[in-house]
Length: 416
Image 1 (cartoon, one colour):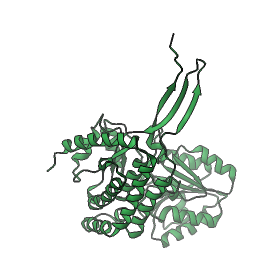
Image 2 (cartoon, one colour):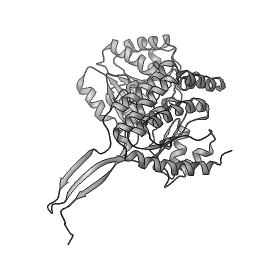
Image 3 (tube, one colour):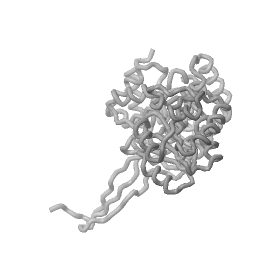
């Protein structure tokens, strides 16, 4: 069996060398690697799906978790399309972010550069490996991918396609690496890899993210839970509200952009809430409602003490009736995770009050929270949704995976 810390040491050293090669590579080479990897995903689709079937056969997880784990021909095609889209985006490296000249004639430029070596720790969703590898390659970063044990076969199959792309472009295989097995010791080694990994990105459930934030000796770009809210204002178009809430909750219940709590104005709740509940119930949704909502619909299950703080990741919706926009904002501030919030409203002033009044990474007006996705933002893919307040917020794409250096150009100036 491979010695875990030794694997990390060797992999990180190889990744550092590969990162230097990537940082100096032409954009055409990185784009070639991405297009070739996309072609390999399509060519290897049957093998990838067979590997995924082995993972699913071994899984005893809930239906929502299995949905995150499951690959289909469409999802494999979507992975490949995402890599092609990333390749077609402008090169994020070498951009002049700012420039100025001082009175002494020195010229200064701030120029975009790669971060270096990125460690990606993720759970269940095997497509995350392709998205992360694609974004890292395009932005000139080497990446160490540690997926969950439940998706190991799928992750390996996807990794083979990424290596195919690297080899086709003449780039080092070590640009994208994954450990030989899913032993948890690899996570511990990555958390302690100060000086070998430049940035850790965890993507998974609360326990994973909290552990990484608690134990890491490496800078962390993390996201909290996706405890997303949709607020239906009194001015909302009823048909739009019904369609948006149904999509935001039930399109895919297991993704972090799914709405977990419905807030609805008291003025319109008696007429509109029964229709929304009926729509969702027909789609298989269950409910946890506050006293005001149950006064309208007594059959709704009462919300428990922690229900409004729960990311269900399943067909369950928490419901609260609120007096106005300020009450909705107060509820979100008390229970939210700073991920994604949406308002359904025709009143522009109310919408602007909501957009400016939340401190979440993404705020939407008359749109489903399930649009919180790097691909939908035009990023090609995402490496995660950042909910912190330092460096990056919202979907993390190419720009957020770069740092910068300063270039200073003189004509012989000396400092007095």
